[in-house]
Image (cartoon, rainbow, N blue to C red; front, side, top):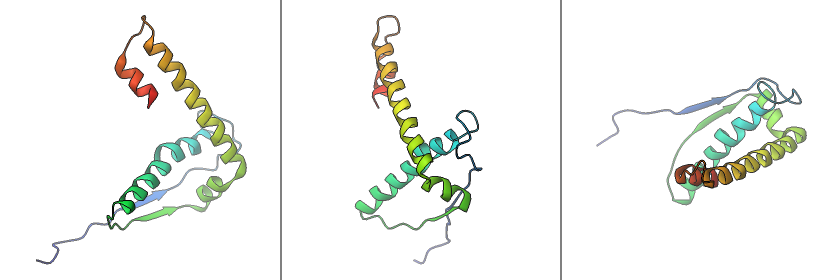
Length: 113
């Protein structure tokens, strides 16, 4: 039986120019959050699908402004710092949620993740 229709999944990505614009709330952290919470997880899923032999098609557009920032050495260096800060915060959360005052095994698991 031939397919009854088609589905097109198009992802479009743009962020304003934020390179060296400071941190929170409208600085480079926009780029860092997008990279760590959207682009890298998406790439991981696509690699996983490929490894599993799943055939997929995807259209992804990235504006030149975003592409330039994602390739910038300063932005990438600051991304490393951003990730180090997140890892340190999660380690502190783990200690806190393991303490008797705030014991919460579910949040300990989340902090470890």
